[in-house]
Length: 308
Image 1 (cartoon, rainbow, N blue to C red):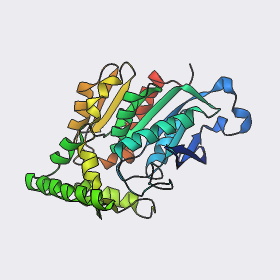
Image 2: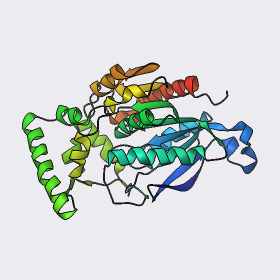
Image 3: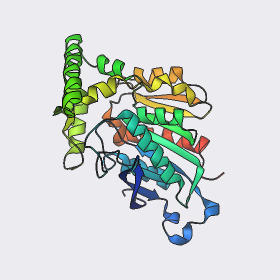
Image 4: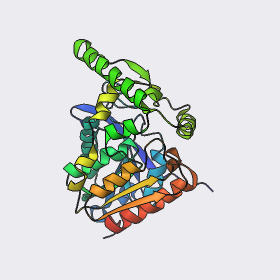
């Protein structure tokens, strides 16, 4: 029998004056109005999607597991993604940090949530976002980053041949000037910038098929945005709040070295989990997903328990 999705409701809130849309997932005993006793407030967890993802892709499965464990969960689309307002399909890594802070504020304001017990969970590029957000926002009490990126330039270089990387930098330079002169960036196929391995391309295509929010083209400004965003520079500021990093040993899209370097630079308490025999997109499906969520729940239960 398939696990049952907990009660969810569409919500909206604002980041820098732009309306963002999301879904609030509630444990079953908090779904009814009489379950919203302030004395029984639960910890809340904000889920952050990846590079070209949307909240309806993968994250509802994470939300289901977490709400079944008693957590209140918020998923949302960044500015310009999914159902949220704003210029479409921009990476804007620092804007994503601001959006995630707005999400924390919104979640902490809900009557069933304890604002002093807020957590973050991010996957892929969302794993980079949550590290940066937690480092600068003390409201975050516990963090889980899954197959995340620690240094954008190193990551983009690591998955390319030298001539491919040189070509990428040249395209970025040309587009940078165009953006300054015209206000517009050239849109290209997402795979030209993301450069997925064979397994990632296949699994991502299957997951994105039929999802109207899953865009196929992104602006070249993604290159500059990625090259300049390095969460490992400030990951040490999260401590003494707990950070868990989960990666896979066969990730050919975001090499596990990214999580390893974040772990090396982070302070205690911290944990690095390397799941054996899986690739990047397998963290969302099957046995790998099960292991990801087992580790995630154990971490939250230790440092962000439902009952305290």
